[in-house]
Length: 347
Image 1 (cartoon, rainbow, N blue to C red):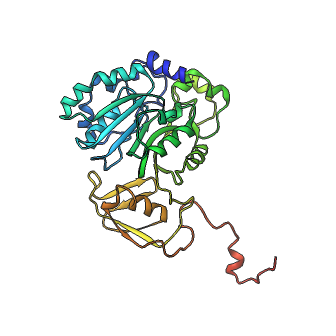
Image 2: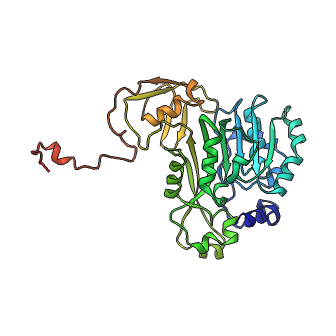
Image 3: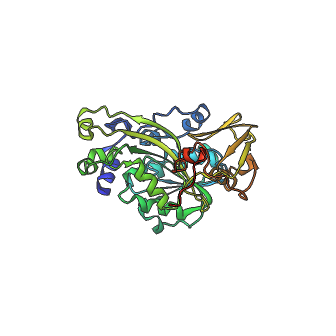
C-alpha cells in the first residue's frame, strides 16, 4: 500500500482538483487571522495541499515543530510563520515529487518571511528512528490526513512519543470511521489513496493511542465526510466517515480515567486569538477569569505544558474524590440499594 500511496500522491494527483472525494480537503473555515499567513505561501505549494483539517494549535512561537507527511509543504510554511525566527519546522515525507515542490520554494519563503527556519527530510513516518531526529527534541508534532495512509499506525505513534519532549503535544487531523472496514475496502487503491480505506475505527484509534503511552486522547473538533462519487459510495456501504482533530500529550502521569482531586484553573485570557475563552478541546471551553473545575488529567495537560504561564492553578493531588463528574464514566455498582440504607450482604 505504500507503493500505492507514493504513486497516487506523486504521479496521479497534480492538484486538489484531481481528488475524487472531500476526505482530503480542508473544509474547515480558516480563521481570519490565519488568512494573511496562508496568502504568503506560494500558490503551487498550496495547490498541492491534501489535508483534512487545520493543524495550527496555539502558542507555537519559538517551538520546534515536526510535520509528518508534509507533502508539498503548505502546513510547514504556515507553521514556519507561527514559530517565528527563533523556532524551527521540520517536514517529513516519503514522496519525492512532493518534496521536490516543497524544496523548490525554500528560497522564496525565506525571502517572504525574512528568515529560514525550515528543512525537509525524505523518509517513512513508520521509521522515524532512521531519520536525523533527536529523541525528545520536539515541542509539537503535527500531521494532516496522514496517519490513515500509514501501513503501521502503532509504529508511527511510538515514534512520535519518542520524539516529543516531556509535556510535548501531538496535534493532528485525520479520517476516522464508525466501524471496522472490510478487507475489500481497506485494499482498494483509490479508497486508500483518498484517505478512506486506511481510516481507523475510532475506538481502535483510542486503544492504539493508549498503547503508545498517550493515555488520554482529547478530541478537539470533528465533521462528517460525504462521499459524493457514486461508485466509491457504493463500495463503502453504510460506513460513515469523519474528519477529526485530536491532541495527545506526552505526560506519563496521565490516568486512564478523569479523576477528581478538587482542582480548578483560571485562564488569564493571555493567549492571542483567545482573549475571552480557550477552546482546549471539544468538552473544555475555558472562560477567561472564571474558576473552572478540572479533572487531574486536564490539570496536568495545562500545568505541565506550554500552556502553564497562561493559567492560575488551584489545588493539588493530595486528596481524591472519585471520578470527575460528566467525563463519560461512572461507578459501575448499583447506587440505589446503598442510598436506601439496605443491610449489607455478607456475599
